[in-house]
Picture (cartoon, rainbow over the protein chains, first blue to last red):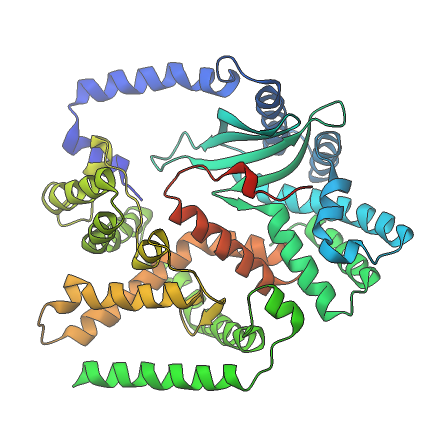
Length: 220
Length: 245
């Protein structure tokens, strides 16, 4: 949106820019490591763990397979994929057999891991800053964050994480980038897909399994 | 004369679109998704993707090859600058006084110190860019979105946003200036707007496409959610609106 390298000279004398650059240099590591003051457990959970995920994705010492495995391990520890899977089935959850639901949850786990890795790999050089949270009910929180790109003057991207704590420990159940909730979008397409395939969950399972394999392959 | 011809062609395309809609019975799932014209929408989307594949993407590639990043940023800034009068009007109509002030400030500062809008010194003075359009204004004043539509060339929309798009075009001061070469100006602006927009969201759309089992449904959901976010103007949504898991 903006053009910092060319517009700054018009607005700032050289000395002021030097001071600002030094201050930003000092502030950047603090933004990267410190959660917001008086952080709630849900905020700390997001701040610590998403940063870990970004560190795995930006670790150049790891091979592509190692990176994918480590990211998936972290994701499975943080995200309640079964709960999301059941939600994304919409009304077809009520008519699917328990065996199909289990098979779908397993296929969804592999698909979600590959899809999340695709989305988050674009933000490995950015820093996550928790800006607050909203409590939906005693065990349901929305943690608000910003993804800050140190090399850009663009406004930070707003990313919200939905955290549930009703299982005894915090787990992620959804993520929204600029107001777009991923699980809601997945539910819309899965329900549409099932509607076009006579509600056959096994067709969806096969399709998701193929997609997980295809997403795992390196792109050109 | 030329303007009349363009409007006539648009009206003919709209009539054909509506006729196609009327002859396509909606499925129960399409009605449930507030998408009664889904079959027609999918056809229009397929057409748009062909235009994208054979015309837009190659020209975006050429644009990247021939114009350096600083030049592309300048084009992006200039196109955003041209939209500022519309943004200002919509800010005022929505009662967003602070944002209206920013839009006005951006017009003054970027027109002068920003060399006609190619540079963006206003952002360093605390006036970041923002978007507003008549579709958002109508939504703020309670107009419902209506069924989902995919417009030829323009992509995801709905009747409210389509009306907003036409209104913004009609009140755009650069379209009101009597100019001998007005059609070429409008076509050039539209062409560079498409290049700029597509070059900005190329990777995002590719990722959505790669991770979607149904690209059409994904875009529909993303569009609706993103528009809601824009209409809220940065205000946090009511947590009660979120679905139960």
